[in-house]
Length: 366
Ligand SMILES: Cc1ncc(COP(=O)(O)O)c(C=O)c1O
Image (cartoon, rainbow, N blue to C red):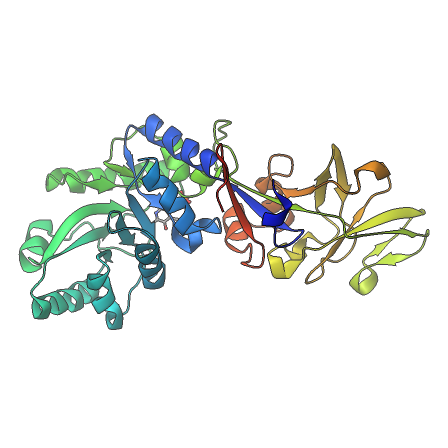
């Protein structure tokens, strides 16, 4: 990788080929089309760049985001081509933008249906919408007692392009997941609904179900919970460089609040990454980095902009090499364990201060 492209010693490499391979793999095993989940800046990877690659490779032209801002940004940065679904709440102040930027609104209760339909009546336009059905997540969605025929008649300016539900526990509760899908299947059968979407990442891998669209998020980035699948490869890796080396003596402490005390004389290195970059402070005294075949433990408290690592066993000739903080040798699952959370949250929180470098077989893209 060209050094001149790196704005900092610390950067994130986003492998576009791996991303496309992961999505194609999920499409193949499900036999469905994919709505690529690009919300939260594509879980921190960069929605625009991934969206461009999906379009360029013909992998998908249907994307989902969570907010109106995410939807408008994607539309402005991409072409008119992709369908862009906004999964979350959109305030009626933004209906103008929903129409202007041709976004698909999720209709999940009477209030939003009425408000949006009144707006469309005033404009005299018909717009695509997604209808959200709640089968047990108990987040957004109509209950399955919604009369679909009556809904379509009443809201005749809605072009219902998709009827969807969201699974609450495909990674942890098979009985509940099956019950959710059975309820949804009953509903779409009753009303002979054609365009459907149910499965998110772990459900795609665990259940052989035939809905029109899968909605892969985390698996497209290389991770999945509740089932192991070695075909998925992590898309983002984070690298840094040692910017300072020093010797410390037995009994010396490292970093804020002296949470690490050396039990022997040691060599330590400083890496320019900290919690302001999204390297969680909860990793204090827990995580390790991968360094030319060595696992180097981090020592003491994670600072805002720096961490210290143990170099005692690492030969000096490696000190100028790159250090991997996340990637093939330091798994995102470990990150989740160290911070007592899931990798979803941590990927979303990799801050914009870490430059993303996009690579593909053609080299660095940007
Ligand atoms: C409605 C909806 N669909 C799909 C997804 C993608 O889920 P996952 O990342 O588990 O594949 C999400 C993510 O939270 C979601 O909220």
